[in-house]
Length: 118
Image (cartoon, rainbow, N blue to C red; front, top):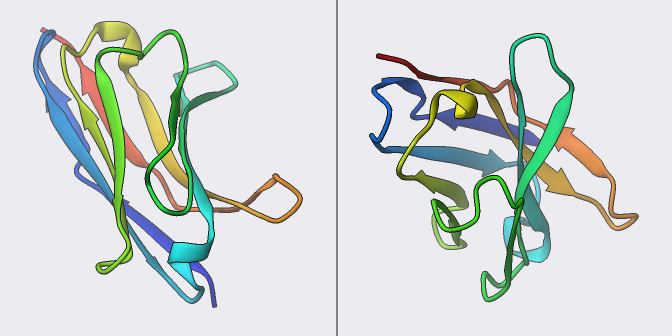
């Protein structure tokens, strides 16, 4: 039932911007914390950002703080990640994830590819 579908990835030049979206369905979106997690080529998963259920509290990895902004629209059941000043090291597959009651990343989307290159 739970479904998370990411979109908005693509190829951008260093210094450019992208806005990722995650369409959620099959659960009460407004009742859950949500996160973005990424996986760079040949590397493990890296937590990027969290947002609480109401959208008033956000958290970021040091590597993206000041450049990325997480937000959500609980009416549209959509999670966003605004990515500015992109760097080649931001190249990764970006996943939208739900944080369950045990704080685990209990559901994941299919991922959307972000490539930052000249």
